[in-house]
Image (cartoon, rainbow, N blue to C red; front, side, top):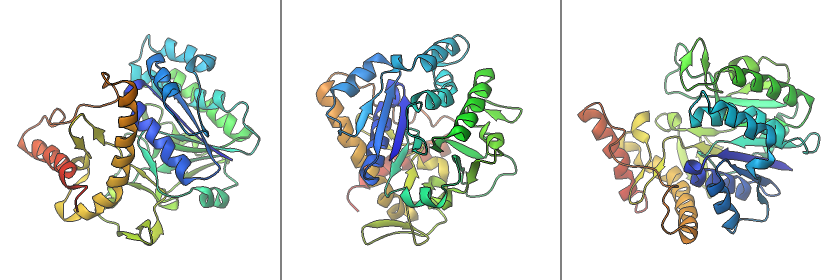
Length: 326
């Protein structure tokens, strides 16, 4: 059985919930574990009518992770403290998993379109797998690390446990949202961790973990109900930058070289993601009609820096208007 895990603060609850549900839906026989570090968000998850194969793990039950989180808050921001505990939480939550069982960490901006089972079978010798960032042009250096910490595949064994312990030690020493001496938050450490013989630093194309960076250069189409990139099924997509507001939706595509002549490409991928998130948002609204903490500000607040950036932000918002009608 494959176990999908996501943890988050209440501000990212909507994304975490949608990510896990897309993973469970497209990976039959799997189960999902959700952890919200805020009591208010945890209570909301408990009140939602979630699938039987999705469980909420109370943050208070993860004694080591909670203690570390509270300690890190003394010198780090809430988000820095949150990412600092990732390897500790994964180690702690997997203590009772069966030997050889796969568990996969998902950030709150991953959406599944197909099953990951075939990839796991092909890479059964690896206990710790992370995936490279994909850029339209390969950079000369990687200020944020070469690998993405938002999607981590692990196999329950002593090798993954050793790697998680080392990652945890590194994050305990230093974990901040700035690039410094080859380090960046929890993510920069992956470059060294993949040197472990039991680890694998894989290309995102090996799993078809799609990202914005592909959309302007790869051949993408819908075929027999599947989304294809270069004639391979798209397994999942990293929709970093998507923001769901009260009235507006911003894809954030202006950050990645948005072009209007690729509009059909974006609609194929973003429509199912947005529909999933809007459905979850409506369910949340029924329980918390007067609370909008799961929504994020959308508009021109991130477009400081002149007319060019404002136009870019506007293009992202325009997608919201047309995405359901073409």
